[in-house]
Image (cartoon, rainbow, N blue to C red; front, side, top):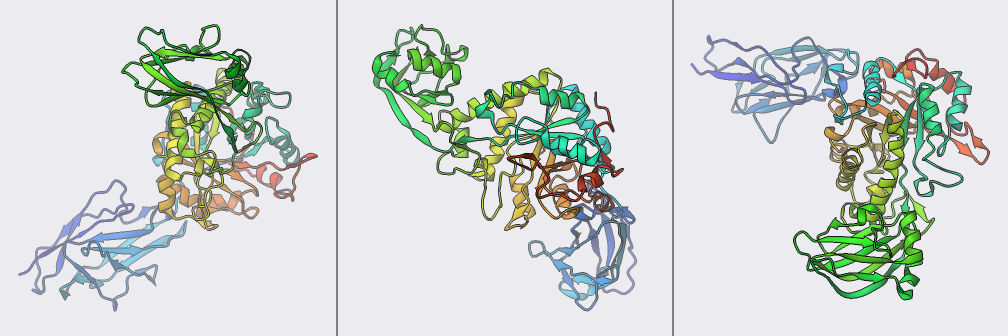
Length: 581
């Protein structure tokens, strides 16, 4: 008597069945009468509940090559489905599924629907599997803590608030205004009769701060919002120079810097100062070097032989250059008095000054000018600009940390632009791999180097491909990873009061339910009831601001009382509905 074992497992979410062997086979036909159990981290036993978006196929593994009998229909709730043999593993059958939320399902596989490929009479036994999609989000999958183990108590409290309400109630949010004010937030509050739970700000004018019209060092707007019970959310439309005014050589030649620190290049004469007079905040001083010995150090001094700033008194060097991005104080000193290059155990071959284009700044792609990948390369013009900007930004964020204020922090948003048509922000102009590296670089700079522990890191998933929902493989390729992301968000500008379940499910599936999903930007608002009914209630939403020369207004989005409708929905949490202190 021939005997074959039949094994069943599930890929994707995994299926587990209890083994059931029958050693008696009276027909002598070699029936596949054994069923083996295969364990999986997430099991879908008979009667299981799953999220519709998380189960797009069932995979059955057999211990023999499999054929499919087209005359015997496999059905899901009575409708025929289309199982196929996996061309890469012909012992495996894949059954594609297209499930809807809040449905009961029965999968019927009649006896003989699958058979041993060399003999149609060797039939796989019948299988019936019942399950349902009566679930929204699964709280048991969620990361219970922030990725930064040193997060401040206030940041932890905000994160725990979001965890407790995820899938149950949605936090409202709106941008304050174009910069460092609350005009649009106040307009929404007046129109709705309730104040949103989250208020958005943007460091878009970092280069101009401090000035008589913008000063991020004055944290009054954020502090007042926090003390009133709102949660601050920060974006960063990171502006960089759109052009270089040129690289000018301040000095060239060869100057050996011996081990005894006796070497130097003095750039204090009239010729050098004529060039250094062009120095400004953001200008980059680059020192070309060679013959760098182990343990070599550089030193950039003012004309009085003190460090141009404390970090430049002495520092380790390597490679063929080092650079310094000038802040306002350093630029003023260099313009007035020049500078001195010193150090030990290397040779200076040139000193150059690169001056950015003053007020000509943009966050747009600038792929031929400001190259995103160069930010990660020490000594490049882009790296110098970025290092100086991050240092300045970190100082402002630290003011918030010192005041006990946490931040929903969302840099490098919409990095991929459209996967087909390309990026629209400079941080995407070198591709998604570079953007992921930039994310990791900035995370390490702010958390490790600058000690900022008040940030909750929000990654914006780009879902657009030729204007349609992007392929999951592309989204996964662009995701920085669970170890440096707390929340995933999408920026959606769609029809008013739509639930956007498909986009929600895309993000949920991307992170396997481990991270909360938020609507990190929107024009028109979400139909909260429909989203809840679909099990796709976003953690929070952030309505983008509208403003013209006369100030904040409802010009394009939510012009018909939608803010009042949404903020007064009992499924929505507003300022005053919770305490996080």
